[in-house]
Length: 138
Image (cartoon, rainbow, N blue to C red):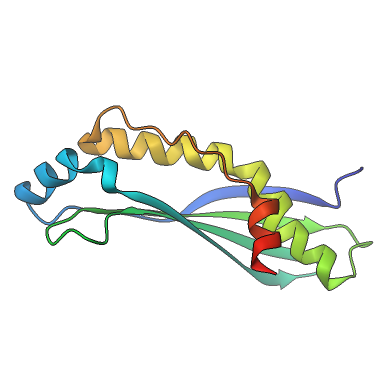
């Protein structure tokens, strides 16, 4: 199957690493296994079959009082082929194809940021099945 889109560029749109104080940092390092990775995808049309697809990753523990919070919004500016006219086909490209293509780079970038924020040898072994998430959403 030929691709029905082309990613024109990718970039970090927003990034946030918040650690209120030393106690929060130490608490985070001690309880990093309680932190969860969440993902959200949204898009907006720009013009002439060009869309901005944003993937937001959040890494946090919502149960901790003193906590750190890490998040990144990564954008892909994408041109859809003229043949893409069906809304469902466009949805699948935005919610499955594009995230599947760019997520490995985003994940490596986010892990690097977390490591360089002092969290040491952190890994996200879980692969995200965007098609499964899309189907569960329905």
